[in-house]
Amino acid sequence: MAAKKGLLERLAVSPVIGDGGFVFALEKRGYVKAGPWTPEAAVEDPEAVRQLHREFLRAGSDVMQAFTFYASEDKLVNRGNHAGQKIGVEAINRAAAKLSKEVAAEGGALCLGGLSQCPSYLTGLGEQKVKEEFRKQVKVFVEEDLDFLLCEYFEHVEEMEWAIQVCKETNKAVAANMCIGPDGDMHGVSAAECAIRMARAGADVVGVNCHFDPFVSLETIKKMKAGLDAAGLSPYLMVQPLAYHTPDAGRQGFIDLPEFPFALEGRICTRWDMHRYAREAYEIGVRYIGGCCGFEPYHIRAVAEELSAERGCLPAGSEKHDMWGAGLKMHTKPWVRARANREYWEKCQPASGRPFCPSMSKPDNWEITAGHEDLKQHDTETTADEMKRVLEFKKQ
Ligand code: CBH
Ligand code: ZN
Image 1 (tube, rainbow, N blue to C red):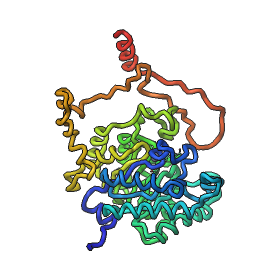
Image 2 (cartoon, helix red, strand yellow; image 1 turned 180 degrees about the vertical axis):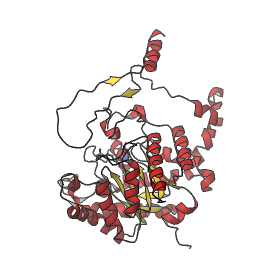
Image 3 (cartoon, protein in one colour; image 1 turned 90 degrees about the vertical axis):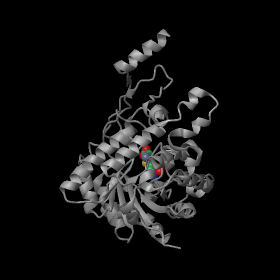
Image 4 (cartoon, helix red, strand yellow; image 1 turned 120 degrees about the horizontal axis):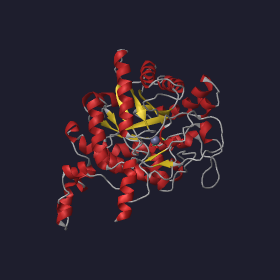
């Protein structure tokens, strides 16, 4: 059997599709607790994690990301399992690595071990302590021989550099994603500068994940690319955004929206939004295209369908969908059959069904994660257009 191609070899020839948001998907299914967002489920409920990997594989993901988000020892402190026993850094990272390898092997996918920002950085314990936390996770990823490493969800570029440096102590390819928007990191470092610093620290792939919607995230990527080009650097570009529309989010992204995290449903992107996202990302030059919180397998299937010509294949899950929903041709009602085409879905403006639902909210704007002011009352704003529609709706 020919050896499996690595990440960088794959990126050189065609787009690589990532998977979606595990903590959000598994929270809704009852296996992750919102708040800590830690991945004990890798140990407690392996079947749930395995099934989600399988669904993303079937949807077209080329990468099975081991479920290790926030699984650093300092974050797991005092977290117990169903029986009140502590599940530690070694157990979670090892179980998650094995699950991702198992499912990746079912479809020739790659698997990755991920690091994310850790509490030791925010409490100011300094470079050596923070790096020690990262090393405990990376050790397991290397022992389990995962294909590459990803540093994702960092709000501060300095901590990101430390994470990349720890990853570079191995011989694995390293990808790096900050969870920032076009305004840059939480210390005021611009998106362009963050990208340059990630590349100079040794990341082979740089970009952003989480916090902002696909289109805002692509604005950030454009700024990163301009900075990298000007500095003569050319790492591969990567994006794994939210599947929630966030045109109204501030510097801290969706965390500051009043709907975070339990009432975001009105903002969910459709599969057709994901077609546009995948195309725009590819055109900008992004080659690693995936998703974060809110992305379910059908969103990834849409990315894979949009890029099927570039990748030379359709995902297995398209068998039950067909391009642009062509399966609707088999519907019994003629007006539904008439929707089996691209033009219809590209033009569709989905209604919320909630006449008093505003189109935008006001973010809390707390900026940096520090301080405990009293909870501010946040109200929502209704745009003029939205108001007009509400009034028309009432008249009917
Ligand atoms: O879930 C995943 O698939 C991870 N790869 C990324 C999670 S981004 C998590 C956002 C929530 C963080 C928080 O509120 O602290
Ligand atoms: Zn996320």
